[in-house]
Image (tube, rainbow, N blue to C red; front, side):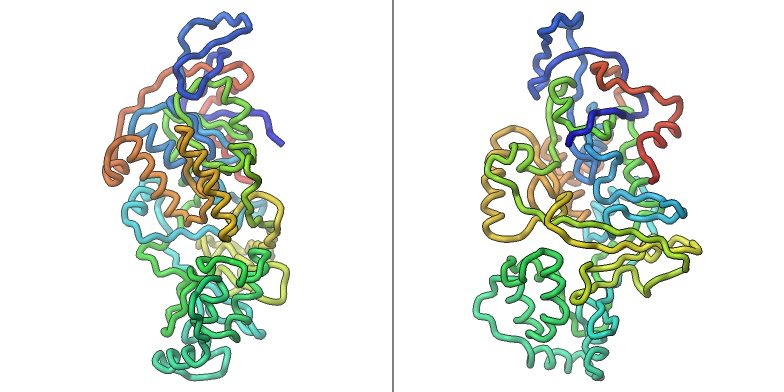
Length: 447
């Protein structure tokens, strides 16, 4: 159900009113209902950007701060930041509303870009798996095998151990093939099959090889989940980082707003879309399949609940993992907050399901998208699972293309703010807050 637009934010609030229609290119704006502004030139947004997650926010910031463009950022949710949104719960604990988000990248360019908007809390992510009544490191490493089997192998013996159990697969096609060919069927059953079936609602034998190819197997004692050069968390949270990114006089924000409710009212020149591509085209070829998640948050009256941020439950429980946020944030607090994740078929789209037939369906939508002249960017718009840094890189690449410069140059372009009055219809006229603090409180609720 679409919610009506009710909140707009910027350093300068939107003001004035006018009725008009836009053809998406900003060339003409007309009114056939006797509007007194009919025939008069209206000021327009250079861009409407749909979606205030990483892709939309990075592009809004770059277009505004890098090119002096006037941007309207629209999101159906009541907050910016997309799935990376975090907030303080009723006990004052910083939690991630949509499950754990851990930043890591090998790109200095991406890390340096985001560092303009946040300080960092150093954090290396570690995950344990509950297997056979024990908590053991995942990805599988030397300690995993020694603890699970009561052995005392060294790295060379670990190689031999895995080789003796691996099954020869002539042609690796599925996620099952990837794992069985590396570690054998017993470890596949203990760590991967149950987790994958819960996560995707499909057996690994039905999923493309890319699903489990992302998870390494190590013959040393490295228990870090990621090995990227840059691993850190925004010191004051993701939402604060997004606030700073979007704090520019050329950026206006509309929350609780479906862009389809305003696209024929608010004049604009170009559209950037980061939402579901199949929805944009009214599901012309059918819905693209996604795996969804339900989150159950709990606040516990103890300092810590588990030894690391994330514990996976591959087999015996309906949930896939439990996350404890204080490990991620470094927050000092007498209580702790955890979240259980329950994968499901219905709900907000999170993970594109990696199967050949789904890729073929997306290709049909991709061909439609390429013919529109609209920019489609981000996970949902390109039907691909990206890490956060990859979405930032994709957005910077698009901005470079728009600006006709290299990506390195695009990340560093600066333009003076060009403040001007932007006229919009009465239907979406906001109440102008008296201060920046008031605006942030109105637009960026903490709970």
